[in-house]
Structures are given as structure tokens and as C-alpha cells.
Image (cartoon, rainbow, N blue to C red):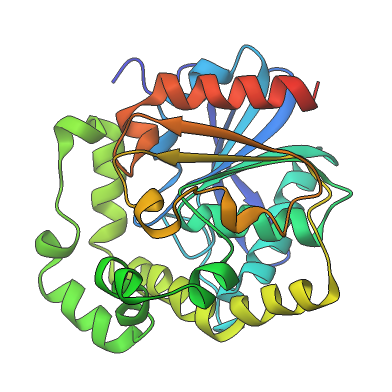
Length: 289
């Protein structure tokens, strides 16, 4: 597609943990965009160009996803380990201070980046996510009904056998919605057993490490130093689970929380790219530059 990431460069960036695949383009204050499950960085293909006039946009495959490195231990799949690798990636690109926005699983890694590296993260936007600690501590029958996959995916071997046995059932392809090149990247990732295992270990590490890391921060009274925006899809289930999707963030934010509902289903970057870009531009325009 001629309009697939126009003006962006595809790179492989070496970090102490492994190579991270990314696209970079634009000009201005750096902004790191982190995708969710089961996507890759190409989910941002319509959003990133809309932001490129105002920001240097970095779209990265999360470790364990897409064509970024595969962690060699379960702890390497934790939010803390992935946040360290992503910070090293941004440093390798020459950015000591940057904004970060993450969707779904990417929101948890963006949150951990901001918690562990407050001197480097100037602003944080989370999309369709709450801290893993909050998700698990607030889990009820609605969570079990709608987000049961968290616990099934954490059973890596069983989930891997199920998914690789019928990938079309678990990860159906909708090329019309994703766009041709984004769909091709999605297909390559979700049909690769090594990548599927890496994505599943992200969930397993969430239960094994991320909840405890969040809980330690909560007990110590640590809060985000960066300004926070909460962005959610109104046709997803965030409001059903939490009422106000920003409410679980109240005890983590140091100041007012910017709220941006998006008229979209869960994969907002693909379904409502203009609205997502507008929300990020509005929020970041108030806090970085």
C-alpha cells in the first residue's frame, strides 16, 4: 500500500535484551507507541502519519511480539524487563526523554515504563487498560466472563496447543478492517508458534511478576510522576467493568487525569485512527513540546 507508514523508516534496534523492530518518522518531541495483543507495531499505520507533523513517532513491536526479540525467561516477559528494554531502545535512538502511549497489553508496559523511569517519561497515555494490580484485585464474575483469556493464556502450553491447532479460530483475519499490509504483519505473527508463545508468556508474566511489582508500588505509595491520559473504546467493555474507566487510575496519578472516550471497538487505532490521533495530540500538546 502506497500510504502504509509514509515517510517512516523500518529499523532493527539493538538493546541489551535483544533486537526491537520499529518504525520511526516525523519530527518534534518523541512519542513511543506500544500496541496490544495480538497485534504488532503496524496496528498504528493510520495513526502514526497523522501525528508525524508534531512528533517524532516511534512504533515498536513489544518484546515477545511481532519480530522483536523473544525473552529467554519468564521474568524477561515481565513488564519491568520489557520496560527496561524499551527505555534502552529509545536511548539507542537518541531520546533521553519521551512520551509513551500504549494500548491493551502495551498499556501495561507503558505504565511500567513511566513508573520505573520517571526521569525519562514526560507523559503517559493508556488505552483500554488499567494497572494489572487493579484488574486482578477488582476481578469479579464479569471479569471472569469477559476476560477469561487472561488466565487461559497464562497456561502457556495448553493455550499454545489450542491456538496453533486452529489459529483461524483464535486469531481470525479481517483484512478489510486491518488494511492489507497490517493484516500481513498480523498474519505472520499470529501463525508463528514462537511468537504466539511469546505473546502468551506476556500474560503468564502478568500473573507471576507484574501484579507483585504493581502491589509493591501501591504499598510504598508510589505514583506516576508523568501526566496521565486515559483513552478508552466506548464499544468495548471498559465501562462495563469499571464504570468510569479512569477510576482505577485515581490512586496512581499525581494530578488530574485527562479522559478521552473513543467511538470505537477495542482495536481503536484501526477503527478510529483520526479520533485516537486527535486525543493524543490534544493531551500531549498540553504537556510536552
